[in-house]
Image (cartoon, rainbow, N blue to C red):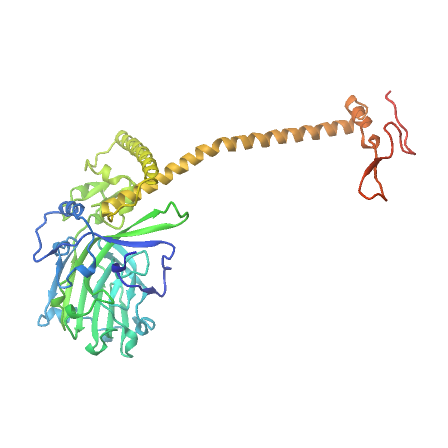
Length: 490
């Protein structure tokens, strides 16, 4: 887990935190530009991502600068309203005039620091094309939207009207309020103070999530410029972010999974435009996920190159929260043809090709594992692409090892089964012979065992009085005890 990814938060309720997994946040390198570069489609954006060589942490970036991929606004378009614009007042939701039964003041969040609580929505809220019915409200001026609940909530997957080190417990007037009317959710941070700068004054702002996907940031009180808020103890962000999660196993530790979170898009708004009585409205743009048929998916003319995966019956650009399913089902290979006409023969050949490719990968993974045991640790940090390749190699290597183990244990299981069958046959034969002798005592087998019955065996008595235990023969063979008559064969 990278320390730069965020600060630690504790979730009060809802889903348990993922303490049994390791959560890493890997972000592609951020290029700072003064003006947005025109980009015709998302394919160019994805190709440029592959060329980004490394990761740049938040401490190396200027908070007042804007990021290239954010200014493109592939997922949202935003508009900022100044204090003199009538829309600023219109976008502010006066919670005091709302239904008191639906307005809820969160008692714990209003009296704690760096805490978060799950809130259920009464409607489906589309976020980056994904529908959400549950969010996590944090005291630090943001909403966490991820499914995997962990401590580094400030890293990615957030809706942040003003993420900062707010501490509602410093003042009795500080509250965290939310209101759901069935078509919109309003979350308001009311008169909250910065923990390390209480004397600067209180902040009052809110975020409104609409059922049509619109997101409104409205600001009532902002005592200082946001660019002057310290980010030493807590990140300072204004905007949106989303990511996908990759789950993979750790071979050295059984029954333990590691979840790696990849941020695929972020929107950072200009902080110097946010003052008292300002507002920002963000409108969602069409995404590939909204198309439910192959024909509409391929024919879509939006900011993304949409492809249809027949195995999943899903339209995607390849970068969304379902990224792992897209890759595991070989959708990138299937979508190269970019056609809806797929016959059974083609599908079977594609499946056979996938199986052949998986076998080749397993062999390569086995060779890679054997080579890795004798190689030295790398001296440079792996890139994002290297990390993805390593994850697949680990999974394939584990599968190859399991297959080898099954082949080794197969003869052992066969021998054990044959031995048990042989033992059962011997026991059944003994039982049958005993029953036969019991019902036919005059037979040759019956007489054979009668002559050799225990009464004719030499008796042994323990000799007393000696200095050590010993046994002595008392009766010789051929003599009968008194009261018994030795029978002769007829």
